[in-house]
Image 1 (cartoon, rainbow, N blue to C red):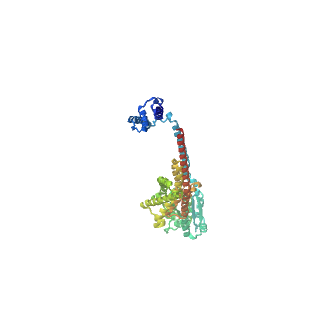
Image 2 (cartoon, helix red, strand yellow):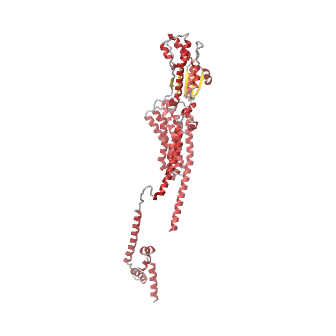
Image 3 (spheres, rainbow, N blue to C red):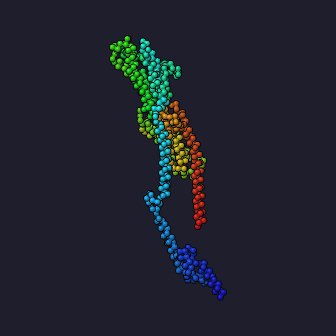
Length: 537
């Protein structure tokens, strides 16, 4: 009896231990699953007990098959539930659906932010460029013009007034700032002597860009006028273009000099010619009538004397519009190209930043940028050579190499600025990249494209802009204008390269630290979320 009782207790405990697990109970109906009878299980338990008496035991296959069926049935239900969840697709609806209330708020906020940002950009950047051209005539006083009125000595009766003596009063009525000298004043100020040295010095002052234009009046204008009329048998005629010379260099400022500044001189020429034909010449003829009766004057000579005009000489003319591409438009494209090269390198820079030590990242970035700009500047120069641009006016055969190296230096100066700023933009708000690109172009273009002599003093910041300085260098290379500013031009470009190279280290460290903080915060957030899920389970 005792053995039977112990067998019954063991059997009961075994049956309890082999009952269906909790998930299976839930699947089979919870509490009702305990009422199910499994004879095969009892037989299996008894068989295991009998093995202690050296009896051979084989597990019942029917039990195994039933367990497999139960498991397969449960897996099939799970698969169906998974398929149903995967088949759930977000349905689309109309924009003003009540379900999209939060989305509409999001769109509205973004709409207001974007338009506010664009409006601010337009008011600032566009106004900056528009301001270069606004009310240019108001700044004519900043245009310096040289007027040299060489002595006009008259060896005739005292009633004849030298024509040159009335020109200063006519100058006072004109716009711009005129610097008027007679022979003695000019010789004393510039340490020259005689007409030939005066003429040469006037051209040198224009070449050195101390004045935008000059009016050089040759000596003895009134005496020549008198001799042309009084000497009947002489071939001498009064040709005003030989006596009044206007000098300028249009290549000094391709955009502003001829369209905006030279009209000041033409207005003065019109004023002088009007005074001469309407007032001075009639009075002059009356004053000499006692010595030279008008009836005796050669009509041909008189016809020459009745007109007055200036001889305008452009000593550095802008004759090939292809040079507009090389000196100005090409420089703008080159600036924008430095943005493209950085964006293209962006993915590889990000990968290398993960494997290089911080002190080597700056060296790597500098090598990539400098090498790329070196090659790109070569092919930019090659395009100009393909279209047969003449590189020799100033530096001879070395002009191509100087143009290439200058372009390379310009690319480095703007590429460094673009890389530093774009790195910060990508770190905080990448969609605003376009604001920087267009803004940087406008910031450079305004005081470089138009003459700062016709702008507010505010635009003098352009002297520190890379584009303004490279355009000045290009003008020297292609038009042989004054080299006096080249030292400053190259100095500004080198300063930009040095400054941006130094800032690159700071920017890269800042970006690296900020990204590391964000990754750490994201990892902690993920870990906290997984911990919360474990607690809930």
